[in-house]
Length: 89
Image (cartoon, rainbow, N blue to C red; front, side, top):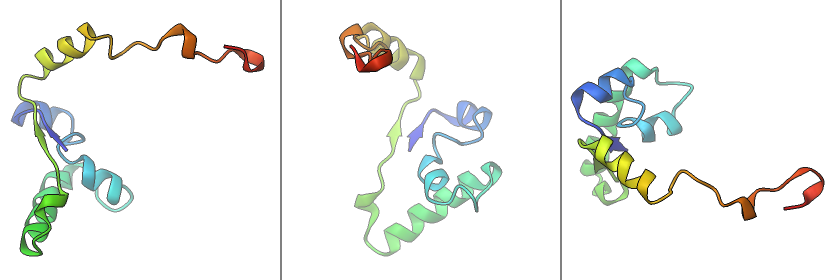
């Protein structure tokens, strides 16, 4: 999961800070329950000494992170890796 701060998390319907729950139970947990479900998952894992299995990244300065990734060409694919029609690169 990635925490972008309260306002961004709310505006995105907790799809990033509740991403693990979304992928585990996407047919069972609606977006408006992702926050509570994530808290329950973390609590349950802590009670079972499994908290090391859950990872979260705090990213309150996500705009700076986005610019950093853009600067590193993270968004671009090399033309050499693009497969054209007929299987030719």
